[in-house]
Image (tube, rainbow over all chains, first blue to last red; front, top):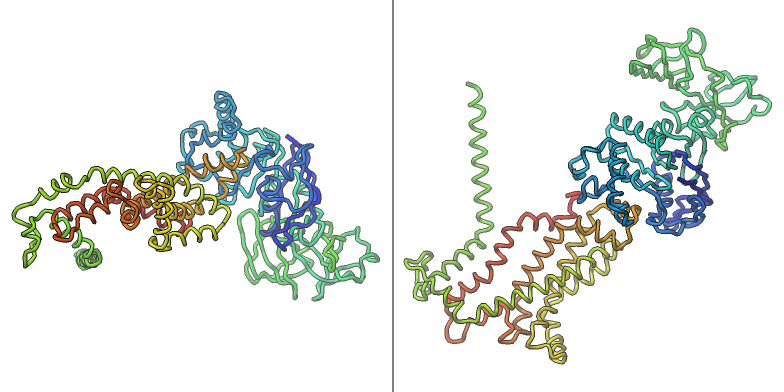
Length: 352
Length: 283
């Protein structure tokens, strides 16, 4: 186990700057998720930590060791790939013991460690099988087993669940998290799925265009997104954004809708500037009074109802937890929980 | 009652389709098949039947003596052994050189190197045969099998390299990355991961190199002496100025073809798989 420090990391592919000056500190035993849309540089960053991609500038440290220029084999890390990357010509047992075999570990000891890892992951009966004889979930477990057996300083996961179906993904999500809680090895996990990030991480690093948008605990990112990008990226369905200004103690959108403001906003400070008003769909409630809107989309899942309302000229997505009877075309009254409102500067995108 | 009415035309249609397909296939392979049948026929006929008009396909008496004659008269076993040595050595050397070369080219994306190797293969053999003949003469290698082994590499190495490039390009990079993370040196990555996965490709490269080397004639005719002839050259030498004895000639040609033919039949599936590797991802 070890800390991981990324300091002023840069990555260029030819003239293209993929990552510009990025720094993150990862504590010992922490589960950090790098999340962002595709092309944000998260996988490149992970591959640089792994030693599969050269660093164009900056420093990577694992524990006290500077590893930026070390080959992958000397970094004492283990990685789980998106397509599992199991050696097709080796049995599950050989796959899991491969790293120890390379280290010329004592075979009895290797077998012992493989058995232990297999027990953790419920693979005891599959040790003689070949990867092609396994299901997707089992392959995923073997890939994790291969990482555990090594007992490395850091685990790296590169979108490990994206090849699984939705149900299995939820199961494996739990298993990875449980494994981390049991073993406690420092983990860096890359995903584009914000639900995975929210459910698994101790700390989330939101990346966009090679820059860090925000670093924080999942709920911190949800409650206090630092900017418009994070606000839009974290949370599902996505936050409503409405352009407008503060006038006479209320928020007036460009199209004339009047919305309540949180108490702590001082109109004197923010008044007059173009702002963006953010409210999550789940923080809008059905109410007899308040804003009226006509439902243009209604989707019920049983546990909740998602509706898109046409409120004059503004569109608002709402997520109702209570069961209310609305249908397409109905007019619904809603109220906004002013305490849950987020305000952003429109020009910089930063939170007020 | 309705079902058979619908089904019968379907069955009829299917049978017709199959007959059509069979016919088309027959037409396409017929020159090859005909040529082969005629060779078998020639090898089993006495000289008198070979010149007969109208031609005879199946003779009344089989001339097995043609085959006996091949082995008795022409030092055939020596030439067979020469062929085995030349082809065996050229193929094995090609694998030893070509498999790592193909790996290196595929991994470094060194297309130019691959093209240079291809050019060596495309250059007509005769254009470099004479200079090489002189070179071998200076090196005092003529009269041994070495000149032929070395020059057969021109045929076998490019085949191996190109097939292996195609094969290595289809093996997922992640496997090798996983191995290097597991602590493997580049050489271990090649030996313990890339090589075992490429086994089917190696088999194909081996077989094709073997076939091309075994059948090669031009190099042998220039470089081989009386005692270092390979089989195709030996067969050619059965043609004399006074008379062509078609029976023994055809018998000899069939014997030469036989090992390759058997090999091809056995390895058919793998050859096709190897030749189309890389055409479809994961195919």
